[in-house]
Image (cartoon, rainbow, N blue to C red; front, top):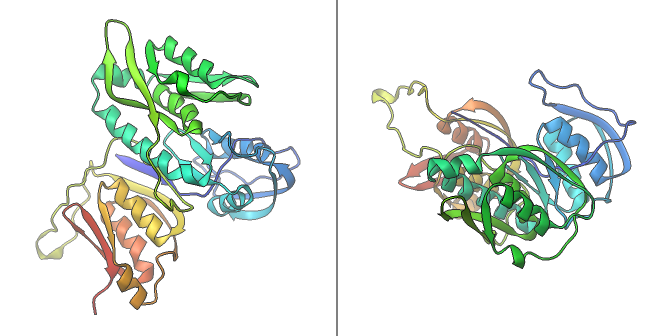
Length: 339
């Protein structure tokens, strides 16, 4: 099982004009660097092209101005760094989800990640018929001025779903959008998230031909959700802590062990909080210990790992700052190394 995340600051849905230069793609068709010059180009235009480059839909929240001018000169710039510059220009943050990437007002990013994580776990526990319904893929497109209530009602009706709370959705008109095939659960939440709402699949009501689901608020975000957020793809992680081999010998790779591919430039405390969340652990960060060693919790950690196990990932996160980690029950403890 391979878990891939990209930790970034922002992406936006749009198209780069023909005059912009672009990087060569890597063998797996994802750009390692970007070379482009944009001067006053609307965010919507820059970000459609980023959608093409990243290979998944990148959605600009309705509450952000799609005409914000972006001026950037990138010369073989790492994608994550480029996205950081775009984030500054938009005053936005990013929620990177398994099937899409969302550019949202800062308060909403962490809530989207939490909601996606909860949805993944909930869907994994549903009866097979409901899991198949939630995973049903289809494209979705609408024209300028479409009303979100109408769009949601049409999709829900076609899937045999009764949506409770649809009438409480604020009245609005949306810009034209053309999405590729996405799972039904992702499509519904993608639109509802722009109103700080989501679908609650837990407790779904079923009868002979209809499924009853409720629209509920997104989880409350933390007081400071930070600049970088990520989300995992797939079922919850196995959090069992495997004991070391006798004599401290390295444990051989488990053929079914979760591996991690991570590209990140993030504050230490936010990165650790995200890793702990993915591991279903509570983070205990020794902030006083960090202070006495002159280490800021906001210190930026940059690393890139490919298909490493959990232990290697944690080692790579803490090593640059001479920290150590331990898993104690359901708690991930991180602090300075002992003397």
